Image (tube, rainbow, N blue to C red):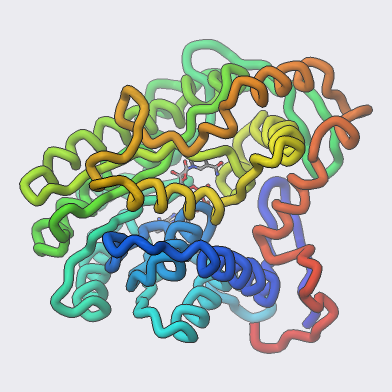
Length: 395
Ligand code: NAD
């Protein structure tokens, strides 16, 4: 069968195995060409949320820039009948192929990271993949729409809404380039609480507790979770909205985890990353238009980075420091990988473009084309050296 993109809103329900492999191959090559010379880098790494976006980039960086054995946990859909697997499924298969080729130990688990069962299975996998060793890095990069609380069985759904007041702002349908105003009603208290349950730090803390109880965390280990802040114009729907509340909780849990790891000299960090096209960020209102303008300005400036470039820079920033406790941070202890995005000249120019952008000029004054390309590329489509006419029978 010839596999083509089938897009529904901000999701593509098909994925191309060759295209996904090509994306992973490029990220592996990038990491191999940015190999660390430091010998204090991570050697045994667990990535939770390892199949797409920042988690996949973290795993590839750990394995190919630092030579680390990795265990990855993700929740992806295999193929069935004439339905392709999800992109993350193919990404994971490609990761495993390259890890095997370079003789780098790995194991991957597919299932619900929020469940007790997946934590137990992962603990066994770590013992088998890294015999007699302990984790020196744990990356928590889950972005999920729902979470079942393992203790109560209750299901929580996250929402992307403002808090307090309705919010109206420009937004774009990135398929058509139509710019219009979106209005979003504020979240209820229950919706805020549910979003914190799903995207806050409770599950990260549960993972660290489970790993520590099993004596699987090494001395001086680092654990990371990712956040976003962004400029004023996205604050109502991000930083000051429901997802922002979840990120405040993530920061609180980072402080708790920090205390939990203090007896073994470990450290928990929040890394504030750049806005990038991922399956999760495509779902946030206003953000695709913001990213389209941001890409144009950062590419012109020569400062644009994708997920793999961000994660390589992050890992090098951590392990080039004299100790994992001395990584440069902001006043709240967060690592700021969004430094290039938030640079004054970029943000000032962005405000000017934002004030005039419309359906008529969006193709000229923004990089909406780059946004679309990146969106299709997430699912393995539109890459220049992939044969999309190939008849694929074993997807
Ligand atoms: P993504 O959608 O690309 O990746 C999410 C990962 O979580 C996937 O590997 C998926 O399989 C996994 N996952 C989802 N539900 C799961 C479950 N129940 N069990 C196990 N795995 C599950 O998302 P992303 O954009 O890379 O986001 C990762 C983190 O980075 C999030 O905390 C996000 O807020 C943060 N972040 C993203 C951006 C951005 O612009 N994309 C910017 C800054 C920070």
